[in-house]
Length: 144
Image (cartoon, rainbow, N blue to C red; front, side, top):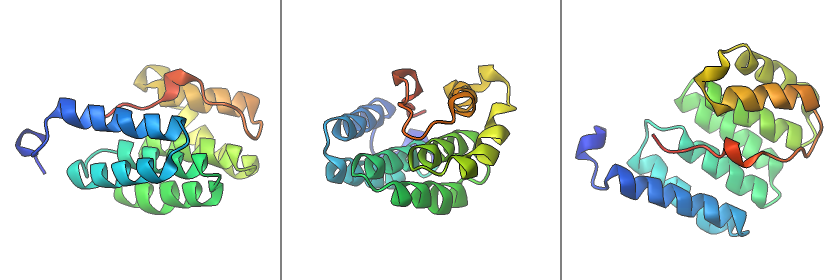
């Protein structure tokens, strides 16, 4: 799908993503799930809807579903995407599976830190490797 022919403008899609993350933040994971599922249809080229969907699952306390979503859905559609891998590592750490997260996070942490906040997040998670570590606000992804 060509973003220039999408029925919604890039600004509208970014606003929808912001609303989805707000829904996660205020404890409305069902609303966030619906928003990010819609974004997957509107922007199949973007990894952000997969990350948002996983964050909605995390907010609902469904860490295993967040991991499954990132690993089996997101990475299936966007193989080896470092941003998805970083958030998979985060979900694994927060779910108490830090040992499984290590190999995933190491792959991302090897990248140039200027590649994006996800590389810095992976490096910080490897340093802390503590289950339940909070995500700094700077690591909220954006739709591009």
